[in-house]
Length: 385
Image 1 (cartoon, rainbow, N blue to C red):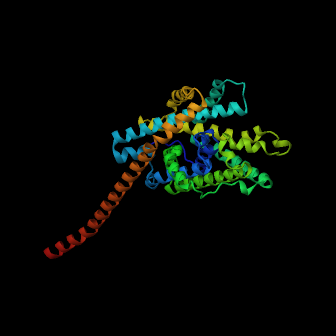
Image 2: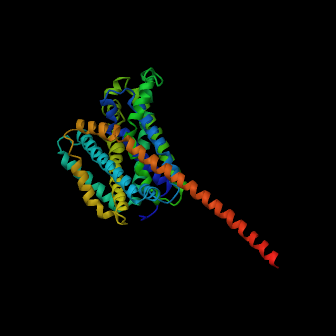
Image 3: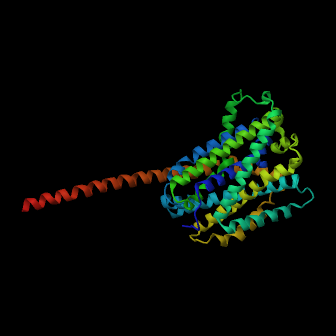
C-alpha cells in the first residue's frame, strides 16, 4: 500500500470541495447550456447528488484501509479488480485531457488572448508535475489555502451583489419541466464520475471516521457554495438569459464595481477560478499516477509522473476546438460511461459489503464455538474423574 504521509479530514474536505467547485467554475458547465438545458446549475447539482448516491455503497465499504483499486482486487480477484482499475483509469485520463483543454481555452480568453495554447498548456503541465512530485501532503495544504480564498471570494461576491439582486429573475424550481430535469439529471450524472478518485485517497487518512467526515464536509460545503453561486448569477442575470451564457461568473463580475482593488474581472477570476483549476489538474495527475502504481504493484508513483503528464499534454490537443471537447465530454465521457462509473462503484461496494457481512458472521460463529469448547471439555474430565 502506498503511504508517504497522512492528511487530516480538513485537508480531504478541501480537496473534495475544490474538485467539485471547479465544476461550477469550469467551462464544462456549459455542456448543459450547449445542449439547450434550462436551469443548468440546478441540473448540475441534481446530477452530482445522483452520482453520490451511486457511490454510496463504496463509501460504506471504505472502512478498510484500502483504496478503490485495493478494494476491487481484494473483493473481486486480481484479474477483475485490475480490469476495473484500468478501465476507471482510462476514464480519468480522458477526463483530465478534455478538462485541461477547457481550462486552456478559458485562460486564453480571459488572460492571454495572444498567447498560443501550447504555451499555456506547458505552464499547466509544469505546475501539475511539481505539485504531484511533492506529494499529497503539499497538495492538501495548498488546496486548503486555496479553498479558504475561494470561499472568502464567493462570500464577498454575495455581500456586494445583494443591492442589485432581483428575486423575480429566479426560475421556478418546481416548474412544468421538473420531470425532464430529473431524467436529464440521471443522464448527466457521469459528469461527476471522478468522485471515485476520492476513494484512492482512503489510505492517506488514519481512520474511517476521518475519511467520512472529510468527504461529507467537503461535499456539503461545495454544494452550498454552488447554490450560493447559482443564486447570485440567477438574481443578477434574468432567466433564461443566464442559460445562454458560457461563463456565468465572468458575466456577473462585469456587472459589478468593487472599488480600486477589484476594478477588473481578471482579479476576481484569478483569485477564484485559476488556482482551483491548477490544483484540480494536479490532483488528477497525482491520482492517475497513484492508480497506475497500484495496478503495477509498486510503491513509487513518481516514476509515472513524466510519461502520464506528457500523455495528458498531448491528449489535451486532440479535440480541434472547445466545441469538439464539449461534444466528446458529453457524448462519450458523460452519457455513455455513466454505467461504467456507477457500475464499478456499485459492484465493488456491494461485493465488499457482502463479504464483510459473511466475515462478521463467520467470526461470530467461531467465537461461539470457542466459548462452548471449554465447557464440553470440562464435563468430560469431570466424568472420567
